[in-house]
Image 1 (spheres, rainbow, N blue to C red):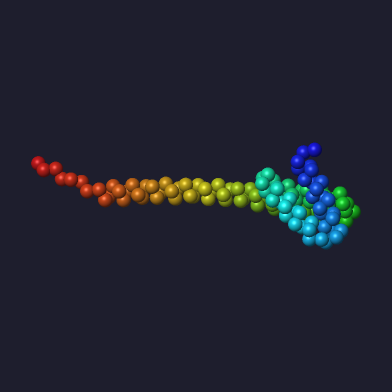
Image 2 (image 1 turned 180 degrees about the vertical axis):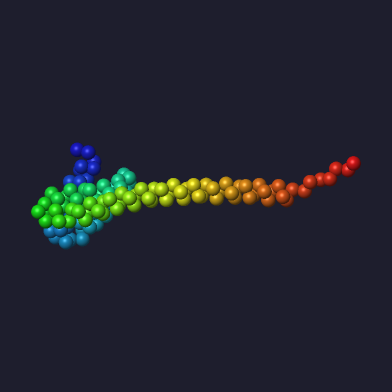
Length: 121
């Protein structure tokens, strides 16, 4: 079984136990699982997919009414991730340009501060 499939099974179990008991220990375990997702570079939209699959499996009759809203959330998260990646790329480029401008400004100051000796004829 792939790691993400094992994660989905564990997520479903935690979700079911939490929904049945409302015990916060399952929230703590879910937070730990989220940390694992972050360290393995699993995107939020994949977690929403896991959640949707678990809810559909656990509460198929009731879940169908909420599936559309979760699909909307999923699409929003995908768009958010893409926009965030573009923002991060632009920010890195901005910092690189800022560094290059600083180097150029320092070179200009050095050149302007240099005194040219006059040659006697």
